[in-house]
Image (tube, rainbow, N blue to C red; front, side, top):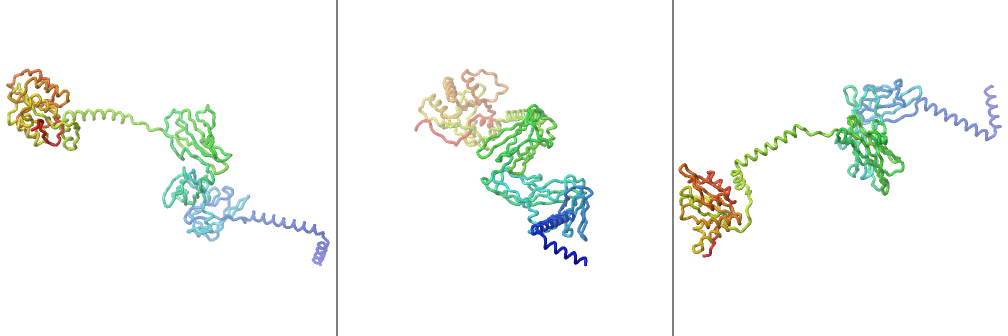
Length: 538
């Protein structure tokens, strides 16, 4: 009865209600219903975030606020091993397919749900979630950032970051947080893997990300970036010395800023500071080249342990940072320098002494083995002219000794000799013939002999003059003095020839290995192909 009346009354009210009032009431009901749904959505955790993780890798589920009193709800009947809660973040050290499902975190101010999916082979459902794309422009700088999505917070006391490793096709490229390209080329296009490693206990756990580098032509969009210095570049310095390091960037946007900082604080431009900065700009056709100089009045010891960062911020791209450090120049070892300064002169003196003592042997070895000699390129016909002088210290060389001297030089050593009694035809004046022999020979060998084979003093004077003018070598063979030999004064002309030439002592019939032949060959010019050309026509 009550119900019926209520229904009747209600129906009458609706039927008699103005149409505009009905529309307004209906709109109010819909707004209230929507607000109620949003309230239930927030309170009951209806928002679900999809998380994809590779099997065997670490994944971290982070609540909106990292508070220790966060309450986590895990999937029922799931493997709950290898789980860690640190700073309100739930960390699965090695995700497995058994751990898939909905994870919820709740606090007095929030409630969030994660849909964890663990894959072994990447499929289309997770591909868009795990792939990261970086667009770079040909011939410009580019930096690949390793994502931090679903990784433990840096402030976690339980996990220690072990750094980042960049890989491509199984090759390790870098171990820096960012992978830097000073000038991107077409060959750099492709897929890069960055792996973040964390230490927990005695185990290292990894989280990998796939970063795809895509290229666009240079003329499409101008890419801003720092062109110098290079990332992690080390500048070698001397303590107390001034230093200027320029950070140069290409900029194509209207709103930008480039500056140096250390310890997360910008370095000021006050010239009174020991370390300050100075700015300069160069206008280009389609942008500008901006340079900020880091100036040290004098480098201190504390600068060697400081990381200086050049940072470029602009509205057209993400910030770009380049870190540099200072290091002491390597000082040369004074002990090594002192040793070198002592050893080198000693070695040189030893070599000089060895050469002085064995110069004849060394010269003949080089001449015979390697052909190391300098031979005049004139048109002289003979290697040496053998002529005789009257010995004042003995009988001179016998006929057998003269034949031995001639045959050894010609037959054994290959010299081309000019012999007066063989190569000069009769009928020519003796003086003219002798002088012509001297002119046609590279050397003259004066041999002691009996008086009937020697030349007059006047002719010897003419020979001396010819030798001086033609710069012809003179080898003076003398007898070995004996105990019975008295000191005899030589003639003035013979003394001049003796002083001019190189003296070799004849000690009788000698073997080919004797020092006499080595010394004689040393003073004679290098041998040439034997030949004999008569000075006078038949």
